[in-house]
Length: 403
Image 1 (cartoon, one colour):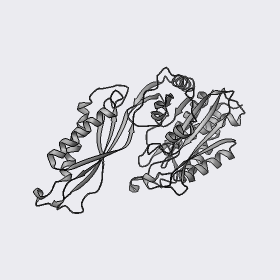
Image 2 (cartoon, helix red, strand yellow; image 1 turned 60 degrees about the horizontal axis):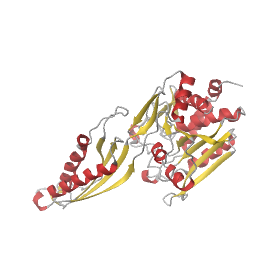
Image 3 (cartoon, helix red, strand yellow; image 1 turned 180 degrees about the horizontal axis):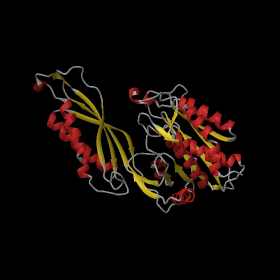
Image 4 (cartoon, helix red, strand yellow; image 1 turned 90 degrees about the vertical axis):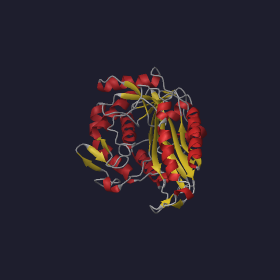
């Protein structure tokens, strides 16, 4: 039997071909102007069957916004000697839009291989994790090795827009996970493969609508300037960083952030005082603070701005997420740390992150999960790439993790 490293070296072109195939099947959510994951899931399912995966389940979350009517997630299973505890790897199939196409040096949907890297939308986020899991599992399949614990690979829909049609739906409707399961999410990490994420900041997205009164630019007293109110509101919400001011060095940055982001179009001419404004905030809050106490301060700020500018303010929360941490002592955390040490002689470091992953959804249900990968963190950027050696390194670690 060949060693895991020899196996992965021999599969390098197949790994590259899988990345190319996956990228060519665009899987963008309706929120990003796309038609969902069905085409990509179909292609992946066919590829898995051709490679010998016999146990593949398909879960379809209904979504009338896409042409297929549903958002598919796949689970590929390799039965083990012990089915009481399953070892999961959860990767997602959806990707974000390309953004400004002029910033790309090549077609985002046609993978380019250059200098040991693969360039294209989704090659790192999250196809690197998907491919590393698949080829680690293939090592067991092709060598007829029965793992100690049943291996389950979940290829989930809708991660990029909150997982309502992916992991959240699976947790609520299908209950496919057990609290005893060991769950790894290859969707975040560092270029050394050292950091294991066990905690996430609470996430709060705000979309704020300000209703004022439109007027001519030369007669501001005749209106209520929604743009001016929005500027005031933006500064005040950003200053909540001074109100919720505790620090936690588990995270980088080590404080809560309240950042203004998206701003919708208002008027068409410079000489019009806008009567409406819509602006958004991405708030990443240390777990020591609850979202409910933050929203109390947001409400207070909205009332202050309304009074000062003569406007009406309402807001929505497109995303709210808070979750406990996975204990460093949890079996999944210790098993992964041991696999990293065995495969690469690296001592793992446990961290928290500001970004959101499906780990938060699992932890809320009392299921321990860790997030790990070897990445240059090119997710969502133009000219996104994955390093081929990183992908193979992760697959080597997963082969050990599956033992």
